[in-house]
Length: 485
Image 1 (cartoon, helix red, strand yellow):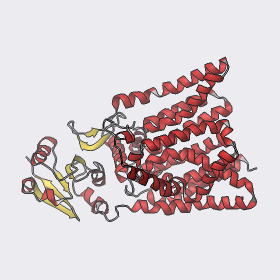
Image 2 (image 1 turned 45 degrees about the vertical axis):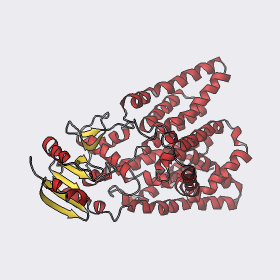
Image 3 (image 1 turned 60 degrees about the vertical axis):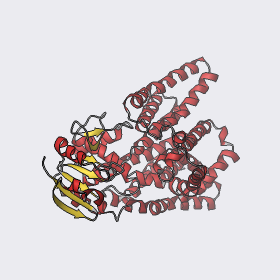
Image 4 (image 1 turned 135 degrees about the vertical axis):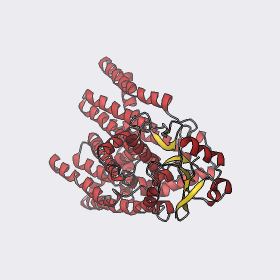
């Protein structure tokens, strides 16, 4: 039996290995898969510490009528706001956000260790499960990239960790902490409220079958969870701008063909689940977990019975949002990491205890996880490496004054271009730029420069008349100084 002190020392290996594997990323500017979502999040962070530190005002780089970035509320921007606070106390560089995100990732791993320990009651086994979780490629990649899902996942893990701790210790403060972290998870990303299904079922069962004192406690503790979700209800009901967002209705809002539906399912089965969510080196543990569940009848265990509804609800979420997840939105799949890690840990326990050969193989599989995670994800950082915008972002940023208001086109994401050049202004998503729009931007919004990546706009005579001079060219991107009007 390995001592707790030894396990704590071994746990330190995880952040050390992860740090060195991510070392080249800390100062790397945003790029790669889902750079649009990363840019959106980082723009929120920047606008908090540069312009408006009001947590209720997450702003974009699109100049609004008040001359500030447009307020755009979707998820509650607690993570963005906290990271902005760190920027305020340090420096205005991407490394600060990267370090904060890495720290959130470590908190997620520590939370997973505690969750597994409260379920399996074995420190060393929980350490192995936390190791597997840390090198799930989708987690390994996003733990360094600014998306709010990082914070939602972290707080959801801690919510479950404290709930299962309550089951072991009967300490009331664990319920308050579990409800608090569930609130943070749901505020940050609404789908994460589904992890409240475990305490909900537990307390409903106590209300139905428990003795009177148990019923009273179950009612009061269930009420605590409900009260903690009131801020979530108020935020998404009163303040967010979710109208028209396909995430709300999933497949009921944007139906897809059966052919497309099954094509997406095949992609997830053949690639996304084994290679990104699990890690190819952990697939054997995942498969063995079904033997634990069915062959060893672990479904009769109370804690397993509380985790099965989580799996069912996460699967329901997947099928509801399948059209939105498609093949590209892998970070929508991060809720799966929690039940998958529990299942992987169950598989590790079975394989580690079976025989000397299987124990040796399990260690080899576990040691292979960092390699497979690195190999699978490394290509994600180099996306857009041949893009004129990404290759010349520093030159483009310095081409005009930092606080200049600019017309920026084209950017159908609404975020990537303005973040890359670090400018606020008027962001266009197509070639249909009316001359009146340019005139209004100059006269009323004090736009002084234009960044343009399409000749269908800047070579039109009715647009060229607004140019005082051409500042520079970087591949397809041209920068113009606008005339004063």
